Amino acid sequence: MRLYRKAALAIFLTLGFGFAHAGEATKSVEAVNLEKAALKDQVVTIHGTVTKANNGIMKRNFVHIEDGSGEGETASLIITSQDTASAGDQVIVTGKVALDTDFGFGYLYPLLIEEATIKQAGGNSASHAKPHSH
Image 1 (tube, rainbow, N blue to C red):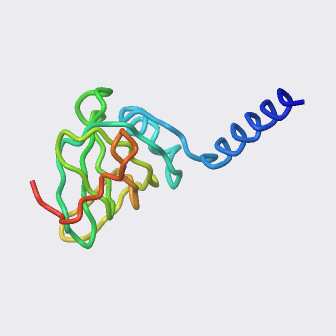
Image 2 (cartoon, rainbow, N blue to C red):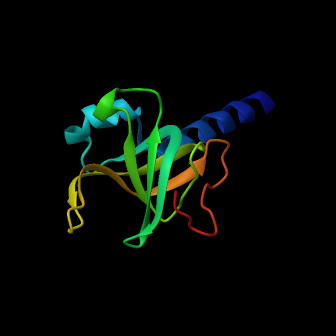
């Protein structure tokens, strides 16, 4: 009977965690760039390295990430978030794919990952108490 309970618990936990992330797709930076039309308005998760962070612009932080995939225009993504991170940080980003975002004043972005959460790849939040610019 004890073995049955352990198996039932394992199945329950597996299904429970699976549903918690339903609808989210884990993608490479290159894949998000190449599949952006199909991913529009969908939530995606990307693992990458922060290359640049511009904080406190238009009440959000703009964080640039790369993961080694892609070349040229498909090699990086720009994330908007209330969280931030520093150049060199290994992060996990989860946010909504947005296309052709125009903030005015010449700030037009063909692709953004918006309203994202940014966590250190080790599991801790990458949000810093004081925004800083690089």
